[in-house]
Structure formats: structure tokens, C-alpha cells
Image 1 (cartoon, rainbow, N blue to C red):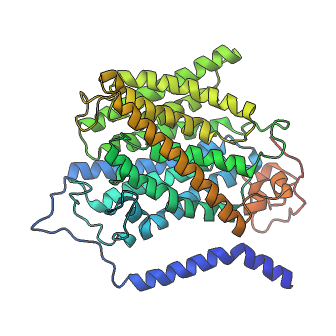
Image 2 (image 1 turned 30 degrees about the horizontal axis):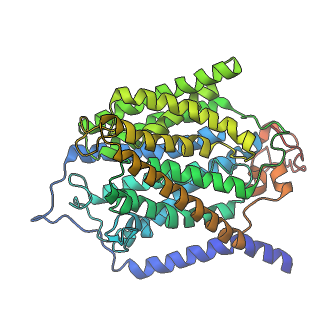
Image 3 (image 1 turned 30 degrees about the vertical axis):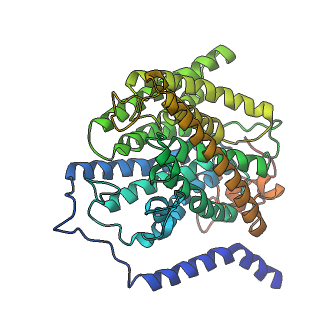
Length: 476
């Protein structure tokens, strides 16, 4: 009986304690918290067109995370599909709370030594219904905070592709709460919030460094530290439902228009530029991937096409509002080729990045950030800078520094967070739990339980009687 109580406590204690302290904190600050209302005398006027546009874009970016869950979910084995999708869904939940409590303030509040924002806007206190001239001029400050929240969410969700099929759910929750606090928020401040990379003049229109390199590098470190999936390289781990992946990829393409065009923060010409460069690079990325795949394997694949499209989306993200539509073609095409090559190399290098978070987002984001230093031009955006091909090699150097800093910060930070979390809650599932599948072992459910007569989950509703032992073989 005592052992049973201890097991229950170990499984729930951290969640319960966390919720308890959050409720206490909210109870203490709620009487004093207030959203700043517009100042009728001195506030900037809200542009209703821009506001409607960014509300729509924020919703599109939010859609990207469920889309990613479909993209990832179709690529894992059927015994892990729900656990994989759960990672994306819970990223929305956890990051949303962290962002309101203090994440947005750390990322965008007034600068502290070029490293992080202060806590003046914790709880979104002072983040008002009017524009803030230091942040946005035509939309409510509160809307900008909401828009940026969606970027933080998708970044965390991307990471989950690296450790799919082998991480314990409690450890996942604790890891992402810490990571978005100590890695994402400071990095967003460095690049977009007035931090040192921003002051240096680096260009990152919608998240090449902040979103894609950080998530890709984090995924690589976690994949190495967690170790390979059992049977990797010897047991079939083919995607269990490619149509689901294609649907997710198509929805990502759709949502990415909000991601990139919305980063103009206005319904203007730069938003239109970002829209067309995004679509162009995505198409070119798909073509680049399947061209290389066709040459190497003799046949182009649907999985290759949708993966190449994502590679093109990743590459254009930092450059979308700074380059011409023509420049988007080589940026996307090259990204498709090099991301495909990176995925081939992981087998040679011996690390198991389950769903290629690093191969696509880390490598594609790096290429995109560097290519921005080549192709950027003030002819399309006076607020940007000229790159190497327009007579300014200094921008390439600045972009390289930003990339290296992101690699080091995300990589070292993830290494430390992993060991901290692992000392509190074991990160990797047991061999038995991994063999059964994370859907059953971590969540007690199956995506396709009605198809499996050996399932331990009832197939006849809440009153069902099918309680046989789950199969102990790794299924593809």
C-alpha cells in the first residue's frame, strides 16, 4: 500500500505542486493586476485594418501547431501517434500560461543589459489595449503579445520531433516549461526585443534564429542525450500514415502565411512581399528535395515533397520581408537539397533525430539566416539592409555571428536543462514502455485500439471488457 501511494505521489506531485503555487501567485497578484486601457489624450490610434489582419495571422500561426501534430503524428509508428500529437497540444497549453505569467515580459519588456527583458510586464500588467510606441504603432500592444505567443508555442512543438517515441511525459512538461523560460524568451529578446543581436543589425524577419535554429539545435542535443530508439537501424520505423503527414504539411504551408506575412505587423506592402516570397520558396524547396531524391533513389516520394516544402518554408522565414521573389527561388531550392542531404547524414553520424527537427529546422534555418545576408536588399524593404549581392559583405558577418550565438546558447542551455530535469524526473521511458508504445504506457489509450485484438484498452466503450495484455512487439 505504501509503495502504491509513493508511485502515485511521484507521478503527480510536481504537477500538483506547480498548479498549487500558480494558483497562490494568481490569487496574490490578481487584485493589483490591470490591463492598461487606451489613453484618450496621448495614445496612438489603432488601425482597425492592421488589427484585423494580425488577429487573423495570430490565429493562422496557432493553427500551425495542430498542423505540426498531424505532420509528426503520421510519421511515427501507430503505437506512438497520440503521444506524439500530445506533445504539440500540450505545448500550446504550457507555453500559453508561461507567456502570460512572465515569458512575454522576459522577451519584450524594457532591456536589461542587452540580455533579457525585465519583469515590468509580468502577468501582462501594463500590456495595454492601445499601441505601445516602443513596440507597435498601429495595433494593440496586447495583440502583439498574443501574436508572439504563437511563435513561442510552435518553437517548442518543433523540438518534440527530435525525441518522439522515447520521452516520458512528465519530463517533457517540465523540460518545455524551463526551456521556453531560459532559452526562448532571452533569445527572442536578443533578436526582436532590443537585445544585443538586434542592436548589432542582424536580420530575422520571422524567426530563422529564434524559432528554427533554436528548436533544431535543441532537438539535436536531446536526440543525442536521450539515445537512439530501441531497434533503430534494424527494425522498421516507417511512417504509419503518410496522408496524415501530407495534410499536416499542407496546413503548415497555409498557416505559414500568417507566420511570415504577419511579421510585417501591418496589412501593407511588406506583408504582401512576405506572402509571395513564402509561397515561392516553399514550392522551390519541394522541387529541390524531390530532384535530389529522384536522382539518388530513382523515384520522387510524397514524403520527400512535403518535407522539401517545409524546408523551403524554414529557409525563407528569416528573409521573407527582406528579399525579392526571385531570390526566394534559390533560397528554397537549395534548402530542399541540403536538408535532404542532412537527413541522409544522420544515419552516417549515428544520431536518432526521430522526425528530423534538426535536419529540417536546424539546417534549413541556418541556411536561411546566412542566405538573408546574401540576398537582402533595401530595394524591397528600406528598414532592412543590403546583403553581399548588393554590395554589403558586412551583413553576412553579422548573420554568421547571430547563427553561432544561437547554436551555442541553445545547445549549451539544452544540455544543462536536460541534466537538471533528468535529475528530478527521468527523461527516457523504460525499455518495456517503449516497446509497448507511448500511447499505452504514458497515456493509457490507443489511436487505433479497435484494430488491435490484443489491446489492453477497451474497444467497446467505457463498459467494455477487452482487458488482455498488450502486444510486446515493436510495430511499424
